[in-house]
Length: 294
Image 1 (spheres, rainbow, N blue to C red):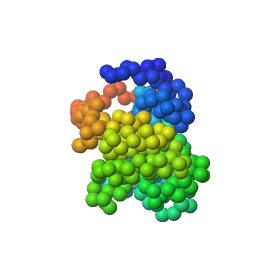
Image 2 (tube, helix red, strand yellow; image 1 turned 30 degrees about the vertical axis):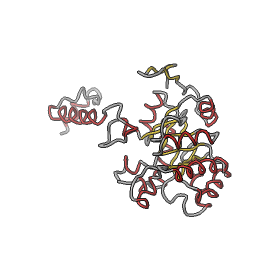
Image 3 (cartoon, rainbow, N blue to C red; image 1 turned 135 degrees about the vertical axis):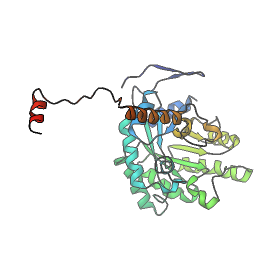
């Protein structure tokens, strides 16, 4: 796999960083230098390979696979074994990318031993570089147990899609002073518990600003404003493959239309028998023998 030294965009010149593996040390360095870095969700080796070609340094194998891949209406339907398999596939497709595996619903909520075991499976079977958990302080000890097992762990704070049924739907977090303060306090507590990174979802900019100022580890934003060191969105939203996208993930392409055209062109080619040159031939003399034996 070859990479150009620089990626030109209409906003900035972004250095390509995939000539060597991206590690947690790399991400910490970027964040300390206030060098913004990007992340997208990914669920398969082929897409991972193309995004790595672009120089994308980090990917999240999210429980959004339940929606994007399996067709469910909620992230809680992502099976543990399924996400571990997808994580391994993404890492095979993009070996130099920092890949995070998303721990699905009920893979860590039950007890600490099963949480550590399941997180460990992401590392050993999924070859993940880190795992991500949707947490608040009631999971602090369990989270610390995973960190103490030697697993790089990302604390997902703010809006928690796995709890959407409990909260009545996807909601913004930290809309008032008391809940905003709680998120900042949670961020500090999870850093002290051993978090390698934080992820903030759907919070006002005042909250993410305060979290970045109050902690010393990298902070990834998902609809959390520009103060965060990194930014992650669902790839299918950016690619124009979903019917609706959040305001912070407006499409930069329209691959849905392109896929429609691929299917239409293929149907047209099949109907007209224009399939290209057929590559498989019998050996010399075999067609005659075949016909004579018919």
